[in-house]
Image (cartoon, rainbow, N blue to C red; front, side, top):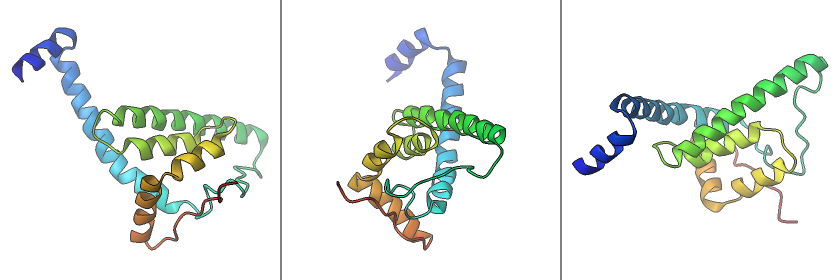
Length: 143
């Protein structure tokens, strides 16, 4: 095991390894708090592609534009952090799903429905929602 650490230290400094470890722990604890907080507060039909999802529809256009920019930046951060959590401690898939749901791109709703529709993901989310006495998520039937 020492040879592995020595090999890694040839390419990455000890300070960088410590910083990555601290960031990994922060991401892990942060996702343990943020993911249930977000997923429990979603309406049950949030991932149903048959239901429209307007966002900031009644706000001034400049405020709506600023909101979309902030939402996409935060979504990109969640997506990147989720990708990192595939290799580091944390809930990578769920974090990536939250990031994708915050981003705006064509076909996003179908991608979300496909990810949420995975039996393990859906059962994990619905178990979390059940724990907080929230109804399970509703998905559109396969068309």
